Image (cartoon, rainbow, N blue to C red; front, side):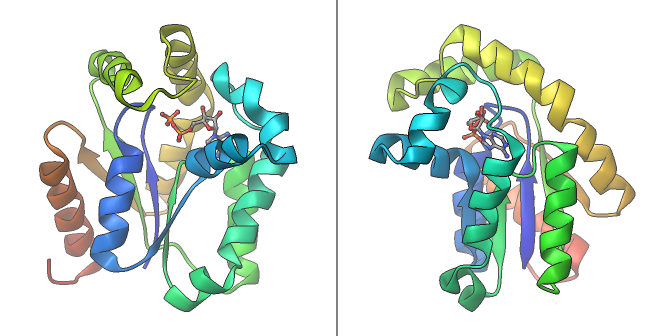
Length: 195
Ligand code: ADP
């Protein structure tokens, strides 16, 4: 099972990614979380990207691609045989880079989950999350900027995956369990497996 999960900031990608990966017994590769881990550990990568992330800008493609490819080729991901990419790809160049990496390793994506959320709900959801998680980029200015970046750079990817017949759109409103069940139900229907 090789999947992507996409959606605007605040749609709940990270939360659902964990639940979906558990459900299918696959590994989650979350670029946002990997970047935050690097920042927290004070690695050279973390120092380089800290201010970009806090301001809600994307990390340059080369840095992001390299980090993802390292994870994709690591033994635990290979052994599990499946993965869910959360927050990657986010630009058309990243799509191309991922395509190349998958072809080189003779792997194919099965589906792309797109979380669909009411734009008016996103900011409120994230400001609430800010109180709980204290993420440096969950302030109103950075949130608004991330939503703009999403529309300009990432939303066009939905058409690409739609045209490839991979897109599974799921309503992101509701409780974590409701959304998870919606996602696994839609995936199982698409992939022809029992729920
Ligand atoms: P959200 O979707 O709420 O913005 P993420 O955890 O997915 O949360 O991403 C947080 C930040 O990490 C992004 O705003 C961006 O700075 C950086 N980031 C994550 N994934 C990528 C990516 N694929 N390419 C570039 N930057 C990324």
